[in-house]
Amino acid sequence: TSATASNTGGRSVPSAGRVVEAVPEPNASRTILNKPNQQYLAHTCTFDLSGVADGTAVDSLDGCGITVTFSPAVEKLSVPASWETWGSPPATESQTPDILFSVSTTVTLTFSAPVRIAGLEAEPGPFEVHPFTAEFRRPNGSLKFTATRDIDGNAGARLLAVKTKNIGSVVVVSDRDFAFAEVRVGRAF
Image (cartoon, rainbow, N blue to C red):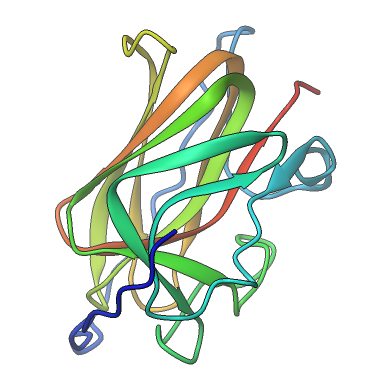
């Protein structure tokens, strides 16, 4: 991590919208996880952001026995101190997580070793519904699986996670700036 403060700008005025739940595909080799249930939490670990100050630029985190690298670098913030809203359990782990903010519409999370479960919670910057895609990629970069969701920026953070084999990276894409939290990796269940 490197210490660089930046201005995240304001959030837009709330507007109506709905969250579209991702639906598991009928394929035994992969499972989309829609909520952080007990199985998911018990078989994964999260990268701890509590020791990183708000406003710090983060290009990688060590934890869970591996390193996750962010491209481009992201900014550590927290709810509600420097980011206004998040989702609520059971759709998210917490209403007040430490988060990572991206002014870019695409962030790649690359793992130093392949994992079987990968996930994160995401929320767009504007207080309105925006599309998200999470591309789960093999260590060689080839696409393994894609999960999509419409996510509300007004306290509507949602999980983007999958259980499958051999995940080397996750590419998160939205049409606006966004934040993500609770980056988790783990073994299968």
